Image 1: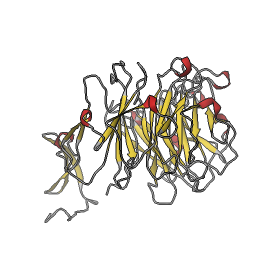
Image 2 (image 1 turned 45 degrees about the vertical axis):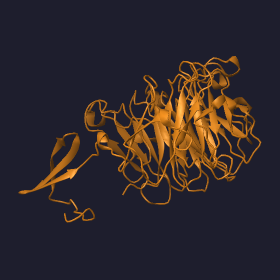
Image 3 (image 1 turned 120 degrees about the vertical axis):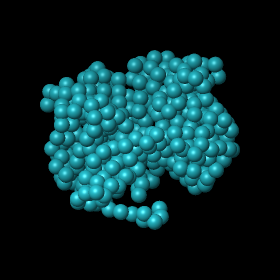
Image 4 (image 1 turned 90 degrees about the vertical axis):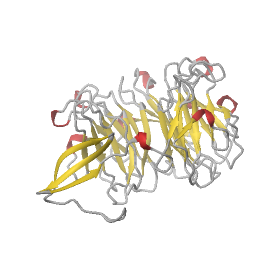
Length: 436
């Protein structure tokens, strides 16, 4: 090819004959008769030089930085998207496993090939420090979009092993507001006072609220972003470990320094209760985008140990549609009827559908957002734990109360199969945006 802008289409007649590994760089080899074409199939991560990308290094041994990572939105309002990295085993202020999260600011260029997270100084990013020993701050991190409507991206950082009010492992989550500048190199999450952010406290001992956190989009259509917090070990309706998830509505102001999740009343947010004991609903939570195209953002709650059709731990994921109002304080996920949301069921026992879920955006260009559901324990074509990822297309309506992933036929969605045994493909799924 003459230059980087030239392309060649590999159509009928070409055969994928082998895969090559040249010093860590993968090539797919296509042949047609005597013709041979080698196509770079992967970018080696050890080749990042600051121009194509860069590496973020944990500050200290044992920090476990990168256990969770996410887009942070534009926290400082400079027009560049930032990233957030969780490091739940950081020893913060002498507090063992208090944990931390790091925000790294985007910029137009000039990235080094590697950035030490310990070097963030407020101008290039900052650190968020956990409040207590064994909080494991940064277990889950996400952008919170703009929850207070001030034009800056906000953050949500989970501490699922926190013990608010003396309730052991009830869990907490912290929302930190973005601003135009003036960030210190380190911010104590314990110092949030309602004006710079706030804390969301789990309800009961052992709930582990914050096991998963995510922006929920604008579920009630009031113009403010909302957040969703999973509490997979909650016991709603005396159903042990049925799990729960909490949606907290955004607003312009009036946040207290701490909000008890049990206080949500339908106007400030609401609770989503797992359908059956030991479903562990809330193990994963995410925005579903606008799946049904009604102008309100929807949410998805994973229940990986649900047993649809009696298949133990096949797992389910529950989609709840947004609307303009009329939310009660609690919604039973088992009551979704297709009009207000629906359930997506795993195919085989131990698939644990609902551990890995995300919105893919509008993958097929029909104007409706679609879903990604990862099933790393799946055995496609009998290949043990090769893993599977299902894409479920959005549409304007006509959802059944329950959808079996095995029924997808290409018109309503499709499956992406892992290649080799134990690949565990689908262990993490996310939208890639518009890569090409």
